[in-house]
Amino acid sequence: MAYDKEIEKEIEKVCAGVSGLTSKRMFGGVCYLSAGNMAFGIYKENLIVRLGSESEATDCIKSGQARAFDITGRAMKGWVMVPKSKLVKPDDYKRWLDRGLKFAQSLPKK
Image: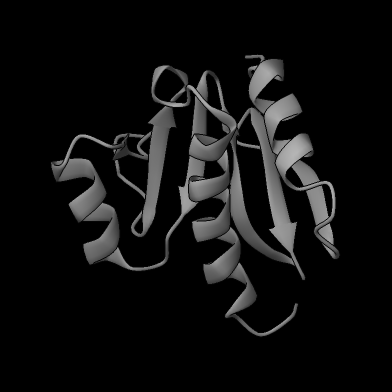
């Protein structure tokens, strides 16, 4: 299934100056990696973000900011899906992308 190209364009705008960021087709969409570690991506019409902390992801889900990243019947721990409808302004993208990058950059390079 195709992923949302508008989300991809917004990611590319926000992350234009981020060094070491690469993309890779995964999950039927695209994921972005920082030094080989997944940070965020696109699945259908959702931005997926790796927060790392299971409790942080749970808080985002409980507050209604995001949904669990569950495409197989088993949610990926520490990840969330942000529906496109909640990504209204460029700052909305920046806030989520920064969170994913922060976690990915905290990990050892692959």
